[in-house]
Length: 459
Image 1 (tube, rainbow, N blue to C red):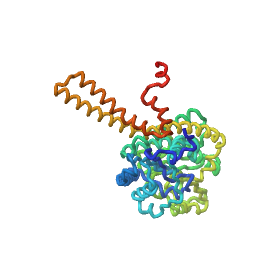
Image 2: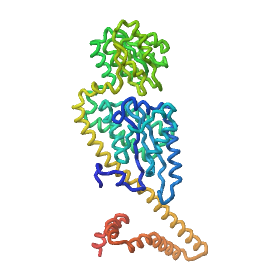
Image 3: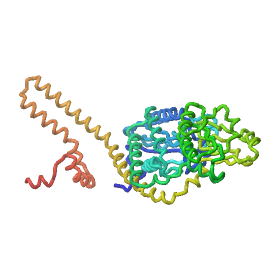
Image 4: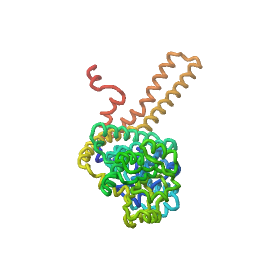
């Protein structure tokens, strides 16, 4: 077995599926770049279908000499605040990265395409791609090391791909193995202990600026999982007032009731900003919802009181030029990195244990991949044997219909069947060179379930 660390695309058979992950994340690109690649949920299914269509067209055009048995292209798109990653399994192709880029360009808005840059892209292939996915699902690649939200986000991404009918045996097995790995990492390491989330980091940041929060009015914009976490952490600090607003009022009311907060009508956001000391925003809006002029107007009635705005959305909800305003403190998810790094040393030791766990499962995945390369050959062998069986059975049936002796017919049937099934094997043995004969010497007993040692003992 080739060591996992040494296994790359060059080590794999051409008949095996090529795995590839293509995208940007918080390691490769700042938030200003990541938000250009951020996809709306409505964009993901068209992207999956467009990419699969393009790959199918390319592989249908390849000659039989280029690829023996084409592997139906499979793809999954993961889009979160810290990453946009496209996972592909297909027959090997030298232009696969370019095809992904073309498919992505086809579904992006004109504004997104105008600023789309490949300078910050990363690409990983085969077992490197598998290792990357296992690391991501386990929370070991997150900005907040060990966080668990990413597992649910990737499960949702896989469900969307399944619904779009763009997955198959390779990616389904890859992702299901990843979920199992993540469970094992959390069970057998302490990676999940003392995690500082973005929500708790936001609270700590506000406490550094204001001290306690009992005199501050806090506004939460959005109603997703991140805002719900923020509501939990901020309500525990007993602020003077906790407000929640969302375009869908029913969801805001549900969160407000759970956390003893008040609901602010989204249409009244502009008029209410002046009354808020802390604004936390995390929506799925495609562009900014709070501009500098709105905060400038709010400051006219705030009498120079400081205002903290924390933008947890990608693409960003709050215009970046707001930070130029006096008495205004704007932070993004990237700016919270220093706070979330607290306790990182202890968790890093657990992360190393997690990586060892990942490497063990990567060996198993590599074995599974190698087994997949034999499936076409096994199917071809089964088809060949079945063809021979049907031909000889038809021959025997004709002889019986001609009233030939049944015992003689059965004898000839068995002899011909045995000869035809063994002819190709015997011919291969006869024409094998020295290296092949050493291989056959080892594998023929296993393939045909006999033992040379037992045969010798009988003699």
